[in-house]
Length: 445
Image (cartoon, rainbow, N blue to C red):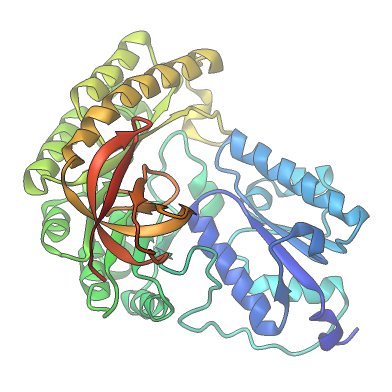
């Protein structure tokens, strides 16, 4: 088979898990299209199917395996080759190779530069190819008006419940100049919002520059003409310092939004989690953020059911949520992962109790959100339009909402609004407890 014949085959890729994994998938797609392959969004049309897996917790592994088996069904019709890559084969290589004979090739994490050779080998095609990475080595899978910028790989925090360091390795920052170049190209191709992601965004630069350099990176990226919003995800509480808070407060391009994974509020559980924070630190941080940036929106997450979590410790967390207004919260149950420090902790909390606790807290937060959102009523928010749902109704986001995980803004307008453009919206109602509703106030840009 020649290269020309091989490139007639269509490739479909399914990316699972977090947005950091999405960035890896976009790099894979770049390699393939740069070589000459055609992509398809329909699995039933693909000659080659690739599944980029997640293996962070049990439910993610289950989803990955179910997706692999679903894609394997296409080998009975059109699919010729099935490739599985990412976290699942990286952490459980022997197990998945034995359990999934339908798969033609397994690749681990950080294997973007191996995908092309893997396909060539599967088809026994020998031809030279250029494997050089440019500043923009991605095919975006997001709407063109926003993109994720992964600023580091791996994690060195060693939280007791987490197997990410075992899968992704130790924390490794990308150089500022490389990230600036990548962000600049993303903006030149239509991105107006850059969402900063990593396992620990606040640790950025410590390995390269021997200091925390997130603020330096933010200031550099802020220089890009045409970039409107910069959004911060996954900032560890103990490293959200005064310098970073001041930068969020004073830099007009940085969204007044921050994701800080607290994970719990009881000091004993936090210590068992091997977290560096405690409730006092968290309370001080919340107070400082809201004092310095009164309109800031905060997202966090909590884990229920860590081994040893008693009713008393659960109530400590519950009271923390009741007494502190946090805009967006995700609740998760503990997943027991082999090779992690928490695996042998005792006593184990039953999945049933952990889920009941998560449900109880979710209900408390749900009942609080409507009141929290009242602060936006009769205010004009700048909103980016994401989609149109009927002739006069659109869905958008303000700077206080991250895509796909937070609440949205329903927009009424008699004028045609453009996807990806920003408009001033007068908020006049709350719908479904979580979401805002408003009408076009005036066009901005």
